Amino acid sequence: LWQMEVVVLDSLTPIQAWIEYDGQVKQLNVTIAPVSHPLKPTRSLISYSIDLSSILLEHMYVGFSSGTQRLVSKHYILGWSFKMDEPDLDLSSLPSISDEAPVWKSSKLFLNISVASVALS
Image (cartoon, rainbow, N blue to C red):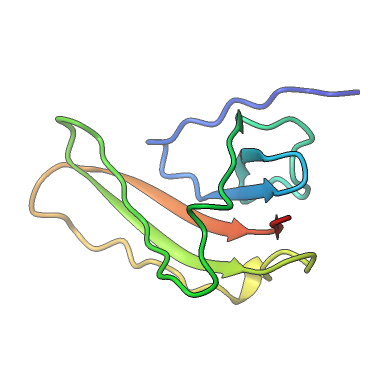
């Protein structure tokens, strides 16, 4: 039985994300869940048909970006992996974030990005 779980991005709850690309069917999927959720959800938050073969090169750099428009916030990437057909990150081995007193009021978004399965045809 499939059950949707609400994920509030500015709730201070650590979140994990799976960004997966299937090169055979040219499908990009993004799935998110709270770190406390034991399994990757079966339904993606975003599913997009795109051919990345001309964009993803043999050797290249990967980076992260985030934005909140007018809101002030902090975003932390506690760990990430870029691998094919391997198990997810061990979340218990990730560093913790100290709760320092901010100079201004901000909402925090904790992210754990796990790039799980990239298969280019």
